[in-house]
Image 1 (cartoon, one colour):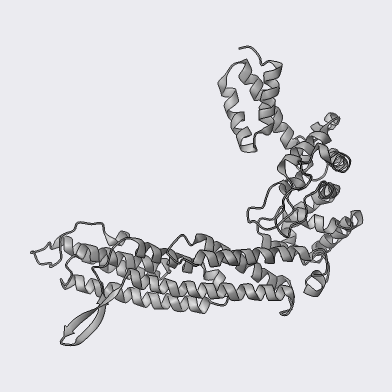
Image 2 (image 1 turned 45 degrees about the vertical axis):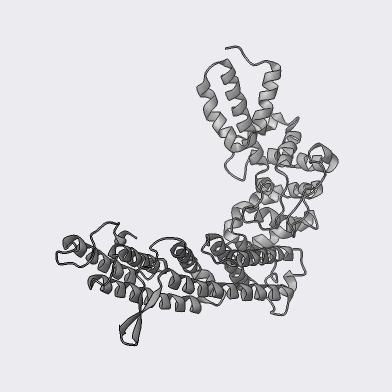
Length: 472
């Protein structure tokens, strides 16, 4: 097969360079299998691009996460991803002799760091001297509220810190846990070195490290150790590091509003986002309690207190709705005993499937998932009281229903057994496992009796026509 023309090769190279990493990996697998000269050239272009990106990620390693938006939506310093590619191409121009040093580097020391630092210095120079060559128009991008402006000057300042960041990132896991005195002193010295490079160097270094941390609340452990007094709100709130606490509190307020919106219908929709947001807010507020000395009357203290009060009220409302939903899914009715004497008993003609049951199941799953968050928001006692109440109600409901089935007082025992299976399912969702097992054992025995003694042969219930509730 003939080789590619110059025009075709240029066009194909542009496509390969614009392909995301995942697509490029797929091309790398598919191209060699096509066969022929053109396929071989495509495979060569893909391999060359893969090697070039690996070198870029090695040279710019500490800054690469800054070109990807955070998955948790917290305001953070984020640069356009297109800038990464353009800056690398400008920085590597004329430096091809040093690029091979970046291949196969596995440690933070070695000759490759000299080449990496040289490329980062060139990148900073390009951003300062020729920003129009690498930055998209207009020369700024939209940032989340509370995040620093992503500008060429800001990115150039980050490139000035790459040499320090390259040694700091491997130590980040230690700073996120329980560093000893020497390790904490190393963090403070790092911030001092960054401040010697630029007045914004300390904040930029924390932004760089923040991009490497998935659990945002844990970054408070680093921020509050940047100086000996940084764990005091009166000091931290007046420093450039205070912006990280404000970002977290802003995200908490955003999630509080989302929780309220997610709970407003209470129609049994998927409660997973609500549970995740509540757990995230609880994690941030608990971390603040451990890391910061916050005054109750300060702006930070008031914001945290209001978030706790609002979420606690919303969770209390959720628990009340859950109780009502369970009673609606497995209702009781009054049964006449004799004369005017009546008693409440399970309504075994209720629908055995449908929206009421699924709505109750969704709410019960949410309540179970809020176990950790409820402690932080001060409503764990309400959650445990709800669990106790529902365990008693569901166990009583199921046992009385099974008694009615055994006595032959049920017109449709098949539907009744499905409802008993639903009660066992609900008990499992609220983690009342022993009660759920007891209900399932009795239900399995009742169904076995139906199979052994069909109607008219010693058992008063109807024949088996449905699935076993023991599998519910």
